[in-house]
Image (cartoon, rainbow, N blue to C red; front, side):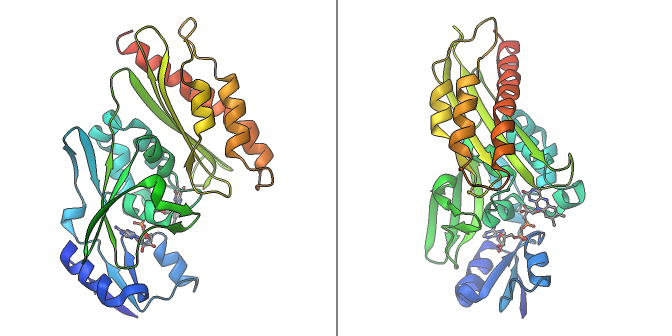
Length: 288
Ligand SMILES: Cc1cc2nc3c(=O)[nH]c(=O)nc-3n(C[C@H](O)[C@H](O)[C@H](O)COP(=O)(O)OP(=O)(O)OC[C@H]3O[C@@H](n4cnc5c(N)ncnc54)[C@H](O)[C@@H]3O)c2cc1C
């Protein structure tokens, strides 16, 4: 196997075009290396992009946050800009493995591995994440929703590199959060993960609700029927009743015969209520 260390996006896309389906990008390596060592993957070339400085920034462009594909999960969990503008993403990144893993694992790698249990994906889905892809033949922009084609399967072409992720920051009177339940409270994959982004008008009506889940047998995904069950609801005494949305979430997000389906169906409504309570408290606390 050949090891190609590249220093720029131009060099990376040259190598990708040279190796095609025989090449594999290496970012933090927390998914690639275990798969290689287990003999599940044996690419002809590993293209190490970890030294490309241009993929390591977090910036604000025209009101949108742009996150380089090589930004580590540890940085996402601790950067004040992310904690402030994208709290669900910061919380999701902090829930991945242990800090040793977070220190090397990248956001781009978590997205491109596209595991059903990928912790950052629900938070990215509620922030309407857009992926900036680049290859020798040009650039394209794909929504995360379109990118995810099934567990471990994506719309990424063999010659393409994920360069950056653009996420919509929180608007006025909007809050969000992320919760994960694993078999253990730390260092375990999600049995179920949930992200909620909620907007409430000054008169206490939910004007927008975005809900996304991970865990189980499907790719992380939004749950439109549960979102519709919350949208338009009126807060009563500063509280949001999520009973109907929780029931809808449990039945829509967990297919009948999935592994541990019963447990996930039981847990999801409670997670939704906790997140909704947190969001409402944050919105009301920030100015009524
Ligand atoms: C001990 C341990 C615990 C873990 N716990 C969790 C957990 O709790 N939750 C969770 O979600 N994950 C967990 N993971 C999985 C892993 O850490 C994440 O998926 C990680 O974010 C992958 O990022 P990486 O930089 O290491 O990717 P890599 O392993 O380098 O790459 C992953 C995949 O993405 C591709 N890729 C990477 N970057 C790009 C790019 N810029 N453009 C195109 N393709 C790219 C690679 O070719 C490869 O297919 C754990 C892993 C370990 C080893």
